[in-house]
Amino acid sequence: MASNRILVLGGTGQVGFELVRAFSLLGDVRAPSRIELDLTSELAVSNFLDQFQPSLILNAAAYTAVDKAESEPVLADRLNHLLPAQLSNWSAKHSAKLVHYSSDYVYPGNGRHAWIETDLTAPCNEYGRTKLKGDQAVESSGCMYLIFRTSWVYSARGHNFMKTMLALGKERTSLKVVNDQVGAPTPARLIALVTLQACLKSVTSGTYHLAPRGEVSWHGFAQAIFKFAAVAGINLAITPDAVEPIPSSDYPTPAQRPQNSRLNLTQLESALNCELPSWQSQLQLTIEEYLL
Ligand SMILES: NC(=O)c1ccc[n+]([C@@H]2O[C@H](COP(=O)([O-])OP(=O)(O)OC[C@H]3O[C@@H](n4cnc5c(N)ncnc54)[C@H](OP(=O)(O)O)[C@@H]3O)[C@@H](O)[C@H]2O)c1
Image (cartoon, rainbow, N blue to C red; front, side, top):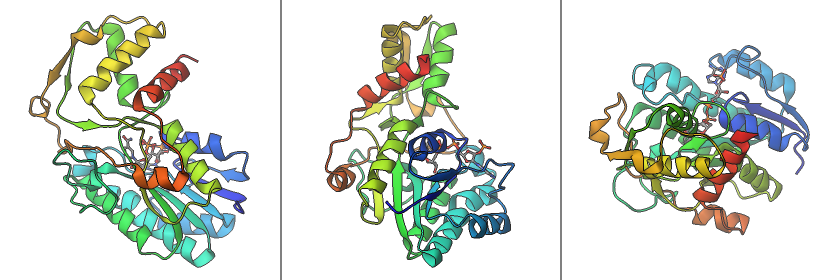
């Protein structure tokens, strides 16, 4: 790969942190923090790009507060739509390659089939609408790009469902978790390693689904977290059987959530010529990392 100036945006986030680790051997990796580069400023972003002249941009920055996006649509749009639009236009002009991350939230979230990349999009909330506009801007920019649509991101660090469950499970003897939303929990580390592989293999420009194999509800995921955590020696007050399944209607949130987050992985697996690992094996690895 000819990329030696690599710009990672969102390097303090779950995926960005792992991207910095994964790509650091490949070249000069720069990951400006929020203080060093305000991504809400088009001018600041433009100046940074012109100065650093990256040959590869990994954009893991995003407005990810799904519920807050309902009341902050302008800020969500700047980060999730206008920023990737700007990055892709710059990349097209400077022959740089852009890797951008998106979400299963671009799909309507109904039914039971695993979405394929060409399925009709119809986001059910503001976050999803801004992410879709970002994808469309990148796709129409004419730059070399990879968009990875992923789901239910978690990691041994940062704020996420696994860490929330582990914290609650150490204190509480029972919990209620929704069981009518189904998807695949995706570790940030897997996203970064697959991104590296895709860049090294020069995978064709396009939009790909990136998640582990298999599916589970949030309720099933919570039970698995407690099961694997107990096996790994983490002291818990709760047992998997004490997690009570509830419908989403019992847990109202400002933003509607898709019930079907299943992603078909065929396109990425064919491009990489390999099988993605199961969500269970990835959970085990992430809990081991959490213990380090
Ligand atoms: N999290 C999920 O469940 C999920 C699911 C599907 C897809 N995705 C997508 O995957 C990608 C990575 O998600 P993630 O979970 O790694 O996100 P994250 O942990 O929330 O990180 C977001 C990053 O964006 C940065 N950022 C936000 N606003 C900024 C601003 N105004 N100026 C500078 N930096 C700013 C944050 O910086 P600070 O640390 O300073 O806030 C942070 O580094 C995103 O495109 C997201 O839409 C995520």
